[in-house]
Structure formats: C-alpha cells, structure tokens
Length: 567
Image (cartoon, rainbow, N blue to C red; front, side):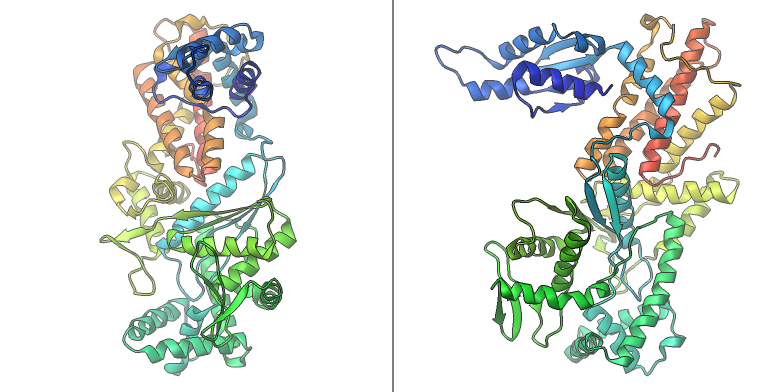
C-alpha cells in the first residue's frame, strides 16, 4: 500500500479538495507527513461574523472526521494538530513493518511504479563537442541527465535519451580554418591535436577579427558540402565518438540515441520554410530573425545564409515531436543557455507545433565547475580533462584500501559522480578532493562503505529469516530502530520528489541520512547477538539491515553508482 496516497485520498474525501500538499516534516517529532490544508481553507473562507473558524479549528474538524476512517486507522497511529494549523500524521508501527517486508520482497524493484503510465519523455543530456576531449565540464550534464533518465524510467515513463553532439556550427569552422591555416593533414591529427588547434585559434582570434571571419566562411562551406570541409568534419567526428565511448564506458553511461546537430542538416530547410509561411520571420541587416513579445529576437539565418545554433535546436524539437510524440522534452544543459532555450521553446509555440501546452518543454540548467573562481573553458584552454580526473579517483580509491581494480573503479568513479550529484544542479562547484573521497559522511565512498557494512553483517547469517509480520513485540523497538524504519518508508517519496524537481541531490541527501542513521544504530547495538538474547529481536535487526542495504543499493543505482559488497 502507498501510505502517502491513502492519506491524500482520505484528506480529499473529508475536505472535497483534490490537490493537497503532503510533505515530510523536517522535525521527526511532527510525524511522517504533514499538510497545511487547514490554513489554505481558512484563507479561502475568510473571517466573518457568521464564520469564526480559524486554521486550528478547521484542522481539528478535519482530524475528527479522519478519526472515523477505518482504512486510515490501519496505517496511522496518531493524527495531531500543531502550530497555526498543520495536520501531522504518524505512521503506525504495523505500517512501518509492512513497508520493510515490501522492501525485502521486491528487492531491486522496490521504488518502481507505474506513475508515468508509459508517457513518452525525451531527455537530452551529455552533448559533448566534437574535436575536443571530454572535459570535466561535460560531467554535469552527463550524469545529472542520466540520473533524471533513471528516475523517470523507474516511475514508469517511456524514456528516450538523446546525446545531442555539438558537431556543427561556427565552432567547427574554427577547426577547419585552423587545419587549413597550418597546412595540416587531418589523417595525422588526434582529438588532442584538434583541441589544441581550437584553443590556439580562439586565443588568436581575440585580437585578429579576420580569423573569426575565416571560421565563419569555412562553416558556410561545410554547409554547402565542400569536399575538403566534409572530409575534415567526418574524420574528426569519427575520432571524437571513439574517444567519447571510452569515457561513457568508464562512467557506465548508456544513451539511446546520438543525434548530433549535423543530423538535422537536411531538415532545417523545411523548418525555415514553415516559419516563413507562418509570417513569423523578418529580415534584419541581411540576417533572418524571429521576434518575441518578451524576449530578444533569435537569429534563424546569418547574413551569409548559414544556419545557427537556434535553427538547429528548433529543427530538433520539430523532429522529436513528429517522431516520438512526447509529453515532455527535457534539456539538461548549462545555465548559460537559459535565454537560448526560452527563445527556442517560444518559437516552437509561435510556429504552432505546441498548442495549449500539450507538450512540456523543460530546460534543467546546471552550474559549472570552477577553477580559481572562474568557469572552466576549453575555448580559452582552462579545461580539466575528465579522463584524468577519473583515473586519479581510481588511484585514490586504491589508497583508501580498495584491493581489486573493479572495486577501485566502483569507489573512485562513484565518488566523482556522487560529489557532483550531491550538489543541486544549478550550483557552481569548486572541485575538492577531500570532499570527494571523504569517508566520514556525505560522499560516494561513505555510502558504499555503509552498504558494504550491511552486506558484511548479512554474510554472517546462514539464511536471512523473512517474515511478513514479525512476532517481535513492537513496543520494545528503540528510537534508532524506529527512525530507520521511518526513513526506509520515505524512499518512494524521495524518488518522486527528485524526479518532479529534476534534483538528484535530493536522493543524495536521503541516502546520506539513511547511512548516518544506520551507522549510529550499528555502533550502538549488537545485531546478531542482542544483549537480551531475544531471537525475534535478532531476526528483526537482520531484516532491518537487509532493508537498509537494499535501499542503499537501489538509491545508488538510480544515481548511476555501483554498490560493492566489499570494500
């Protein structure tokens, strides 16, 4: 049974309101769930001579009505009114025990649901640039996007991941111009060589405007199918994809599609024609633009007829709408693209592709890693390469005690992932190795160690006894045991909250709290040999340990982090 859904159903029946907010209180003394519905009702009623109801009185009336709900009585042990009118619900011990049994029965499937009803959701993430090595700056989009993909899939949505490579545009004109300027042979150049050329060319272009113009001309020649430009582009593309696959293998990231910007090359003319037919384009200094009521204009075509990043992303939306018929398209892209996506989304609606908000377009923006307080930039040569960071992390995992290479990879790469994901997506991050590898709390290794601890306990048990209704005297449960049971019961809610808010950090916070509480319990009590020599108590603590380990594993899996049994 979904206890939160049942409480919401009972509240709706009593109040006649369908959309009710039910939250988990920050203070455990206030129960497992809390709602402010009484205060909202009071604000709607207002104070009149004939209506002296205040939030507290309304809350008390709701509680009195709920006390007659027999279904609710089975899962809630106490309903109280606190403060200015909050209604707090305390789950019964029977409900907490039942939830633990569900965890042990469903294993890795615990937390999965059909909430999404197979609605199609497209998630664009990673999207590195061709002819450049994978920098740490692309880590955020890659693993935040992958986690959002995992969350939506777990909730029963039909998800499609799309890796929108940056393989087109003036940026690629820079690569071609640099190769031609230096009389180099593309067949003799590595991705690292191409990136060096890109950086050097951009630095020189800051003081030599002619270089920028040359890059634009070469991109126009690429669009016009110039054979030399096409050869350089194709070989750079193939080399880059091979390099990216090495990183994705290390990160254990798998993305359904890899449609780069170039994929939409032959589809842009139709979009441009449609925009013109709808009379939403206009000329501006030889360029062609689309204007908006509350946004700056966006350039559809440059003065030389070349397409823009805006044109390509607009075409991408058209393709996704026609091909997948999604309910939602999510873009996990850096915060600096905020205005761009507002313009693209507005243009898609202005053309008429999306009416009455039938398809939701979402930009999940992320902050960047900073080096000495500045955003890392490949263009200016300030980037740190992700592969180097990952290799260093594996080495540090060995230093922590990981004996075999597989465990060291799980711990080291998991540490990097967790460090990133534990920050809210919009946060700008100063990279810190001490925090990445911290074994005292709120790190990947700490969570993995806690999981390994649960498995070490279970390995000492020949057969984990399972019982749907333990005969343990529930009145003997101590505070630490009850706290763990209550935290385990919140896993489903955290999945939903992290999904709705596009915030993997909420799952990180939850798993860290669970780990801390379990380690406190582990240090304070004997699990296998209770002091009172109570076999039912022993059995319960083994089940509690098994449930904790399962939730840690399930949660880490959602984050794309492996949970080794030994460390």
